[in-house]
Length: 70
Image (cartoon, rainbow, N blue to C red; front, side, top):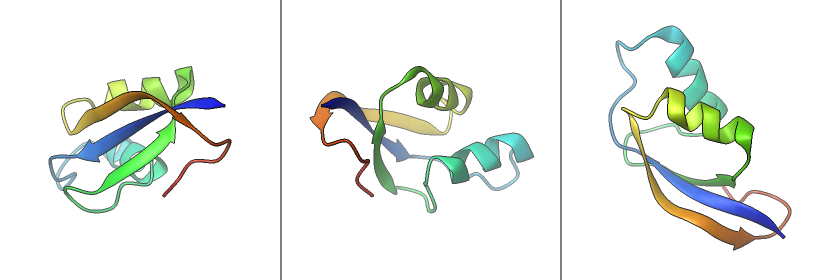
C-alpha cells in the first residue's frame, strides 16, 4: 500500500503567483476549504512545500489503496 496524505486549501489562490495557482490546480484543489487525499511521495511533497502558505497538511502517512481518492 502507498502512503497517503490529506491536504486542505486554507487561503484563496486569487492574486497569487500564476505558478502557484497551477500547482493548486495540479493537486486537485478547487475551492477554499476543499480537501484532497493524495499520494505521499517526493513530487507531491515538493508541490505542497511550494504552496505551504496556502494549504495545510491535515493527516500525514495515511495508509491507502494504490489510487488517490478524490
